[in-house]
Structures are given as C-alpha cells and as structure tokens.
Amino acid sequence: MSFIDHLEELRWHLIRSLMVISIITILVFISKAIVFGKIILGPSKATFFTYQWLCTIGKKLKLGNFFCFEKLTFEIINTEMAGQFLIHLKSSFVIGFIVAFPYVLFEIWRFVKPGLYENERHYTSGIVFFGSVFFFMGVLFGYFILTPFSINFLGSYFVSETVANTITLSSYVSTLTTLVVASGAVFELPMIVYILAKLKLITAKDMRTYRKHGLVIMLIFSAIITPPDLTSQIIIALPLYILYEFSILIAKRVNPPETSEQITST
Figure 1 (cartoon, rainbow, N blue to C red):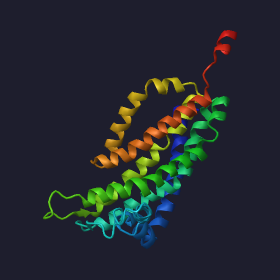
Figure 2: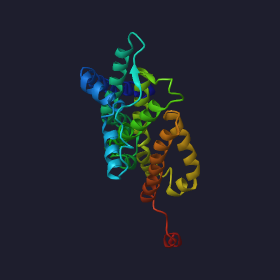
Figure 3: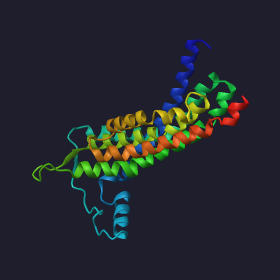
Figure 4: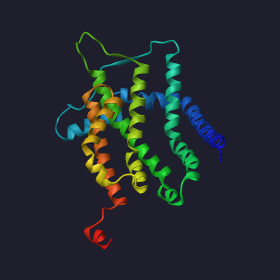
C-alpha cells in the first residue's frame, strides 16, 4: 500500500472509532441524572462509596469517626452562561471515550496488525483484552481512590477560616477527568512492557538497572497529572512503583535470564 492508502485506511479506523464514541456520548448525555448527578458528582458528596468505606474501616479499627465525613467543606458553582452545558458535553465525551476504549484499541490493532510479522502478531494477540482490563483497572483506581482523596484534601484545605472554598464546576470536572483518564493510561505499563519484552526491546535486567531513574520519572509524572498536593502525588506514585516492579516480573517471565549451564552449552 502507498502512503496515501495507509492514510485512507487510518482515516476509516478513526471514523469508526469516533462513531462509536459519539453514540456512547449521546447515550451518556441524555442520562444526565444518573451519569452526571451520581457518577461525576459522586466524589463531591459525603455519601460516596469511598468515604463510607473509610468510615467503616475506621470504626472497625476503633478510631471513632476520625475517617468519617459527614459533609465536605466546599461548594461547587458555575460562573459562565454556557458553563453547565459545555461541561456536561465534555464529561459525556470523556465517559464515552472510556467506555468505548476497547473498541478504539481494537481499531488501532486492526490498523497495525497487517504491518507486523507473524511472530509479532502472535505476541500481541491479546493486546485488546488485556489492554482494556488494565485500562479499566486504572480508571476504577482513579475514580474510587485517587479522586476522592484529592478532592477531599484540596476541597477542605484552608489557609484561613475566613476564606471559603467555592470551586467552579469546570475545575472540579477537569480534576476528576484528568485523574481518571491518566490513571487508566498509567495502568497500561505492564502491557507495554510485555510487548517490548516479547520484541526483545527490553529485559528485566534493564528495568532493574534503571529502577532509580524510573522512580524519578514516576515522581515527575505523578506530579504532572495530579493536583499540586503531596497526598495525591504519593497516591499515584505508589501504584506506579508497584506496576513497575510487576512489569519487571513480566519481563523476566517473558525473557528468563540464561543460566550458567545454558551459557556454557552455547
């Protein structure tokens, strides 16, 4: 195929992906009461699952109501005429993308597959399934763990009791969507390492050698994608490090190091 033919093929893959995302976006948009009222604004309410779970754990540990949140000390407002409509549209599109992610990944795989060798196709045959699983794991972590802690900390932080926390709707939704989507992307690390290890582009030894460099990159990345507070950065950096160590095990299993007997025999 010529370069123009490749572009034409890519265009149709993108069009099909956008069509699926658009259909889901429309369904999400018309389900405002459930999707926006309960899911998006969920972490802003004291009745959210994570807060209730923390309260239950705290009571079982005999810490009283230390981890219980009866009411979050901030208010969400809208300051623009078309603000609520545009935020509703934006958040619906983000949810549409998240739900349609497996299909988008499938279309990407269909575009890349013809250019791969037979062994490369075999190595990456489960990329759609496992890539989707890791992505949704990251999304759930970002929504139920990272977002509530970040919103609760930033929303209840005061430099003075005379300054009330009144947060704009756009700021709230932007923080939530950034944390959720970024967490989903971060959890793709084991899948990426698996493919690179299969293609002999990375080994467990390489990852162990550059572990310190990787840790610095993780801290920088977590500082970029999270709000400017230490708590959120630690919450995202910790699973990143765990994923890194897990990826080392994956790389080791894919390409086990040669034993001394194997080296001698060769």
